[in-house]
Image (cartoon, rainbow, N blue to C red):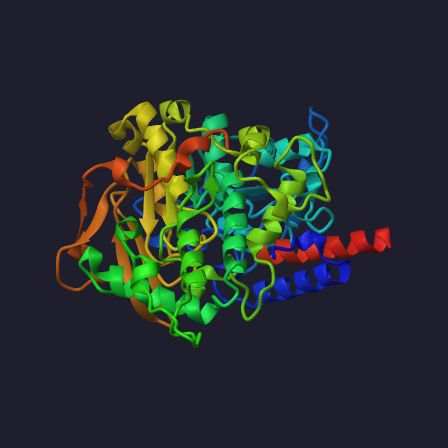
Length: 575
């Protein structure tokens, strides 16, 4: 019987949350990654654009930046001494009405560029959280002026989606306004501090951060010259519905444990790994995988063990693949390849227990405070009606989902580099193909490729981690494209552990396939790009119906720990 997390007694809710947060904090995969697109800038030294050079100096003192802007925003400014992590810089903080917190860092020696980095989950990160500090230092170390925002709330005070309770204005700030207002202010302050405008502005984010970048391209095409968008959350409501459907499928098969899921993954590899011509432990073309759990897995007899599968378990696996049923039709299907523990945890399972997953925690909060125009903090998402409730989410979809309207961004010369991990169990890569196809249908395939390139990396989980080549520097090819006119024909991706290279690949942009031509698989020269028979062959399962209307996050350990603190504060106040 499905029991809503919210319906459990308060002590059990808090205990379950604490267990989940502990598991997340300890998990060594992508959920604990320090920042979105963490490998960004790693190829700076070999770049054809010397973007780390800092020829420009500040013309004002940092103290002069502590003032009130003409719009009434009070600025605090502090000169931060240089260190091994970052050079000397002026840190400017403040709040844009109503509650948009921001931090802008202006290095004394500047490369002439602005770099804004995105958020994760429901955002609300503290500016001094590990992820934020590492992101700040990464940009400053390369000479960028940096900018970030909490999108209008702090998750420690308003956990998960609760900041949206009776505050549509804060949902809008989170959806798109906070990034726009922050980068607009950052450009103005940089212009003043250096007596020259930023020559180029970049946005870099994954998951929610990827969504923020794509939203900026569609809604505010003048804000950025280049956008690095990893695994963007293009359709929040669909992701939440998929999480609910996953939860229901797994609860109907409680014997489908993590070891069994691992055995299913091995069977999937045995059937589909070689379909790309190489047996390497990766599913390079998951849409071509014709695995059928009812046929391809051993069936249990009288005894149920980890080496066999019951009818309930194979049905659950098929439901994970098919996605929810909406009005009798499979919707938002998920390709096979996410079953390995490095991809499935914490999105399908917690380590060693049945605690609610990240998608469960996010989804329950989303349905209470975001999804419907009439909010209900007591909403039990077990009562969600897949046939009628999706039609009630039109407003939130219009706020959160980037529209496939990129003509203005393209006309300004903007460029987008985007990537997805095929093993992303959190954000379904089908969102990427649906969105890209929608843009291409409007602008034409050739024109779309001229400014927007999207790459799919096998075995990579949410933003990073997984079992594939997850070390990806998307920022360097983006800068080379924007400033040098060099379009990325391939996106390099590696997996190097303790100095040992397991994967050294270079992937072709969608809709092309990356095909092995023979020889050493870890020599990128032994792969070529091949056009597919037709883009329409991609299985979207009707997933495109909410395009435009409809890092694990790198920040998740911080976000979820903040959420726990907030829940505990709420309980004390109500007790």
